[in-house]
Image (cartoon, rainbow, N blue to C red; front, side, top):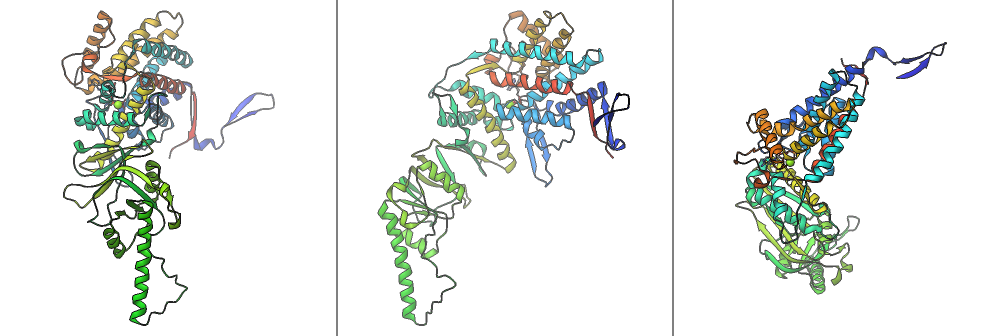
Length: 535
Ligand code: ADP
Ligand code: MG
């Protein structure tokens, strides 16, 4: 697009290659954009809540993902409309910042767009709607703060953290095991957390998965897990207080280089060579033993003879460990990676309280657990499950739970879920609308109505009558002036979310409202769309 002027100084717009472009202006542009945004939200709406549906997505190379996580669904969907991509971004930013609430944020944004469309039809200018939404979102965020509750926890008493993580997990495929998974997530976060500084480094929590076993076998390991086994089946399976030599040099006699020529023409010569090799290797083993190593972890392999010797000399070893894992082991155990044999010294050894090898079921697969490491707080969550899809989805669900636990450590305020917080905000925003004399009040009321879409979707997904259920709960909240009543999705028999223990983090909810408002404002302010026309 270019702006030019004719000879009288009158401006006009030039669209280059006009016949290949489409242009939407004014209200048409807004309508088209809103339609695109709403389409995305409609897809996610059915996935919201504990009774939400899952989506199955097939990638270009045929791999299948089954998930309930909003961010993942949108990520895997091949969206090519630019506005729809904004919704994908929206979900992603919620995922980055908070980790949970990725479906809810898109549902709220979709509802805001839908309400905006109605206001546009009434002839209200988009800027007025955007301003009204901005005011309303401020009211809602403040109100959330007001109805939030703080709870106390410490390293020994973390039941409330577990409850909040359970709310997150209850809407996932893995909700069968939500109690145990929530406990694992909370323990993992507490293990790496710095409660003084309210800081959690989630990078220290590694999430690994292996197909097989069942979800209940998922465990938390205070240490790291390496997908390797001892090099010889007769080596000890368990080493307490291990001193680990971490080697990147080959554990074998130097091979003659191809440039040299070794003539072996008699049996004696061969014997000497063999002896020498053996002796060389013997010295290497001795060197390891001298510095006090009780376990050797090598990046390279060694041959069967060496293996045999190691076994005899009682020095357990692990071979072919990848570089990344080697680094992790070094960090966790406080050891140094040794690239040359001569440099091996006692202070370079890593220390671990327990190293054990564990085999799984009837398979030959074994894994090495390195636990109670000296230096680091690193922990590993080891997921088991029937198939790869299940493990992947469990990883994503655990990620959500970890994020929720981390958020609670940063700020221990919660609001009540099941749509209770949204209904309370909707009432507050509706009441605030009356104070604004301008046309913005229509937009503010529309915002209040849009917030109701979350409890509506929750009710709808649970097979309840959405409007009836919502109005019942709403009137209950008004009558008793208590913001804890939400949708009873699981048919427990009470609407009181305190009794049901359905909590969500305050910052998560606030972020949802802020992000959704931001994106909707952005979409509303676009009044000219110029794009290459489709063929
Ligand atoms: P998101 O990706 O946005 O987290 P979810 O599918 O996890 O979406 O659904 C979250 C919604 O489900 C929240 O509004 C939460 O309050 C609600 N929810 C979770 N568990 C329950 C429950 N047991 N009863 C009622 N509502 C619940
Ligand atoms: Mg969730």
